[in-house]
Image (cartoon, rainbow, N blue to C red):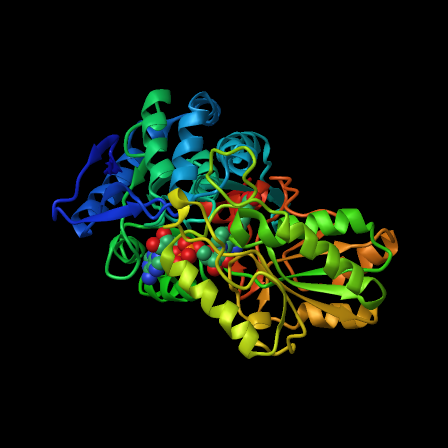
Length: 486
Ligand SMILES: NC(=O)c1ccc[n+]([C@@H]2O[C@H](COP(=O)([O-])OP(=O)(O)OC[C@H]3O[C@@H](n4cnc5c(N)ncnc54)[C@H](O)[C@@H]3O)[C@@H](O)[C@H]2O)c1
Ligand SMILES: O=C/C=C/C=C(\O)C(=O)O
């Protein structure tokens, strides 16, 4: 049984209140950890430690040295790859063959990419004509924003946390991270690596707990916080926005989605089926960029439905460390209840259940886990809750369309605007459709292909701001203009 403490000012410490909560392995339902729940005192200590780090060695550290330390940090994660892999898979239930290609390598790469971005990003200057003819020189400089609150989700715990901590530290900030109560392990393990590579104490702090009236809310309402970066549900984002309003604290949000895939008759069917299988069922459907709405051109609709059904039914569910496992469980019993409530609602709303729709028979050792069947529906109305609301499980609805304009209209008929996948071998159509779908990220003949230099984020109820490459600097720095009269 692992005891999980907070990481504050370079040390692992417990909660003054003594409050603890269980950490459950979602694949088995077994208790695998006991976690300290932070109260206001721990959050206060973490924010104060971050502030002190900004005023100490870290705040004075030259850029090149800071960037070099972040490269060492990435190497430190890689050196302990298997520990991070096991911790992440025990916490989430996800299969090792997913985490060893996505979660852990990206968890490390996020530090390298931003260490390199900050070393190479220019700032602007302007010469201003003045009446006396001498002119004035304007130049901009980027300064760290300060103490950043990082609130991260449970679906890709390490990756999505370092996607924020990487640029935050690269820009010279200090952070207080509140990982999801479902997945405390890898964020805490990173504290050990921070000490190993020599990141000054107080630069990276971790407090555990929940949202409302717990560590999350204490952190987002803390007056010592200069910015809040959050990834999670849209409703939570609204609550955090309200908390931030009192002190006009800057926010960066990566929120929910109800992403469409558009499959045209001129697609490469093998690619479209393989890509949609991944986008619908990877990580047990718990990926914000995942596909829950599939629109298929009518002439290939029956074939596509049949092929996606076959692919879904071939997915193997099992233990994280079984190399044959394609899909793990949902993150928790609570989330499984939510997903199963949509499985029931789909049938009430008139769905044809092409495959799935219930819970699978699992072997004894896994019978206590949060398992659900990969599920495909057809024949739902466009206004069905299962077509409009984010379910965040291994399920999708397939609907035919008859024209490109109809496909685009269907794709855009949503409150979200995060991602889309477009399957067509016609390059003019690819560019034309990608330009018209209201989404922050449009993939063509691919999905989750990530260039970390590119802008990442969503519109409407999918988020505020963009992360990635130089775009992250807009949130993690304050841009100052200096005007020198010559
Ligand atoms: N856009 C993206 O990049 C992206 C990426 C991953 C997940 N998500 C979204 O996240 C959701 C799933 O993750 P989740 O269930 O962890 O989300 P969630 O909103 O329930 O929780 C996310 C984090 O916020 C904390 N939190 C909850 N209420 C809070 C409050 N009032 N104040 C401060 N902190 C609070 C939680 O403890 C957790 O650490 C899905 O909606 C998914 O679409 C979006
Ligand atoms: O569940 C959402 C996944 C988000 C992925 C990223 O933010 C990324 O790849 O940088």
